[in-house]
Amino acid sequence: MGKPKSPIVAIIGPTAVGKTAISLAVAPAIEGEVISVDSRQVYRYMDIGTDKVSMEDRRHVIHHLVDVTDPDDTFTAARFVEEANGTIKRVIARRKRPLLVGGTPFYYNALFGEMLTTSLASDVEVRASLLKEAEIKGKGYLYKKLEIHDPDLALRIHPNDLTRIVRGLEVFYTTGKPASWWYRHGKKIKSPYNVLYIGIIRPREVAYNKIEQRARRQFERGLIDEVRWLLKNGFDERFPSMQGLGYREVVKYLRGLYSMDEALTYYIKATKSLYRRQMTWFKRFKPIVWYDLDEIDEDVAVSSIVEKIKEHMGVK
Image (cartoon, rainbow, N blue to C red; front, side, top):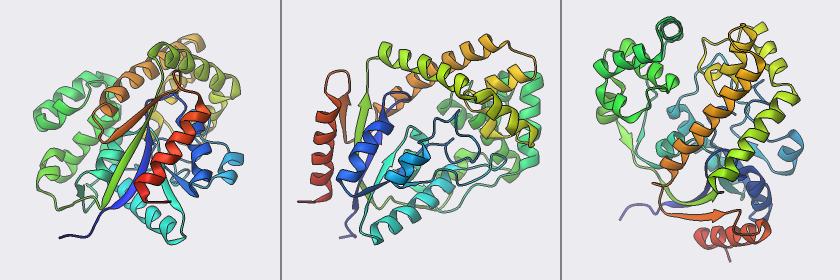
């Protein structure tokens, strides 16, 4: 028999449903520390558009994998796995409990599925060239290239997912083999974790309303100034970080391609589309216990979640 897997818990769910608020209430009750599973909150200087937890809340509950790299870096899923594994071990060594929280399904799949032991190659110049090509010829042109060079990967990603399209082509042009080949043939290790997912949801119309409110609040809080500062310091749309929701729309506003109202409208529309994609992914995650925060009082939900976490982790 192999070594028993370590029990671990993740709070998942689509954008704008209240995962952060739940995690801030749950973590102290289990002597836990949050490990962020968010592909955008890893970047420094990008606070408003990524809706990062406040510094005050981070003093109340320790958060990991937030502000770990600059926006001109590429933070891959393989790197997330490496960082997350190290963090989980350190948290446990201090007799605390890691609590994964976030809405990036690809990161969860990388961490809890079979993991590549090495990161796939990357090349900043190749990536910049591909992004420029997308800007001139459109996402569809790059997607057709991906269908030719890596049809298996193309089937698994949306034609509008520019970040992953570019990443797939970058791997092909850098290594000479498609990313899907590396996932099939690269050396892998099985996840050492026994994960329980806690799913947070709300009715779609409620989530959509919250998405709209949050986007308007981000604009009021200074998202445009945040993006202007990033551009001024050389962190522009060449980099995957700046292709994220909110940032790409504001960049187009600052470049004179959108009005402010158009930037906000397109941002809201894209975020609602993200919500739908996340729900499609998270419905496949198992084992999972769902909590609809419109059907259950938040305090009751927190108590139930704490009880299920302790049961999963064997805590009396």
